[in-house]
Length: 431
Image 1 (tube, rainbow, N blue to C red):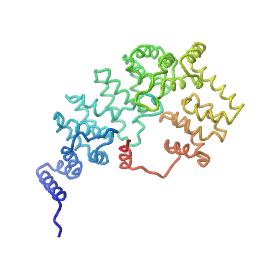
Image 2: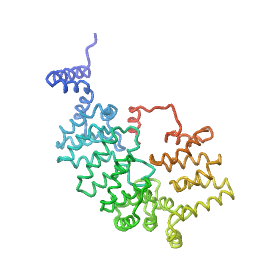
Image 3: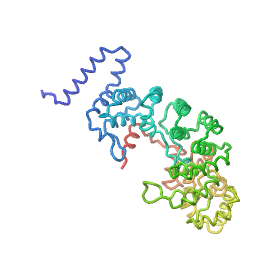
Image 4: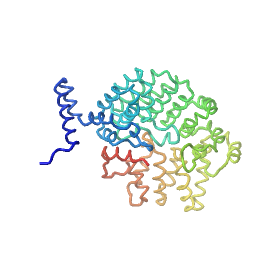
């Protein structure tokens, strides 16, 4: 019989040690130790790894951290215990930060009590620095289209999470942190989140919070305060550090008050994106529905002529011009819509045109699927569903990419079922 290798002997030793611990612990604790043996061993063995290799340059985690993410809620207690045990040890800083990432990735609602204790302790900064970033949906472009973790298919305990973030916001004295928490809450369409934002419309004083509140209300078809929006934009535009928030809320609100700022910043490229992307141009087009204007001089000339009309009139003028193009040259109108309008007319103001004019035309069906995808939020689903359902009746008439978009938005049923383990592995394949 072959002798056991070192790895096998080490595994037996660990099991023996764990068995002794189990005997000495109370029954409930012993049961937990047995059921979570793998996660405990993973956290312990990570202590022996080089902390510089916990997470690579692309954000992919070490194999042991990946396994903890796959174990998901089963590993929560072991991960929390590991943080509690090692936090404060300078040699373990990188590992502790990585364990916070595991918790932020899996989002176990059972961890809210532990998180509340951390927020009330000297480690509260670590929660904001290393845990909350894995909840925050970027404030920039996509405020409306990307519904945040409130629409994440894997999220459980929604009510518990919303309550946790609202309570954290209520007791947080830092304006910067309050904005971070509000940026998370804006991803939820639930009644408790709506009630929170409605209450904040009366109490918010920080101009950043004001814009997030007004953007949320607008996205959920509730009354907004245009005077407060204009005042907040006027204050925030003086600081380049507010760029992402201004762009994101401008994209969500589509309000006239943002137009001068967007024109002034047309030449500001988005950071860390190649090829260069100029978000002010994109948001300006979405706000005005004018898709052929380029450059500050041309935009200033257009705005000087039309600034007193208001957005509703800008949209209607653009719709009328497109209908004329459609009547004159249907093929050209289709190509133009696919290339430009489906990306920038991505709000419900274009819905009557889509539903009444384009949907009856079978040649536009794939382009309409693209528009549905770009205009989608969970809150808008009931408005978009009749259009998507009509497209879904004949998926064979859709181009492949268009069918895939409707599958992703759950308008076309598909037998595929992505397991949690597959999702975790795919999320750690960043290049």
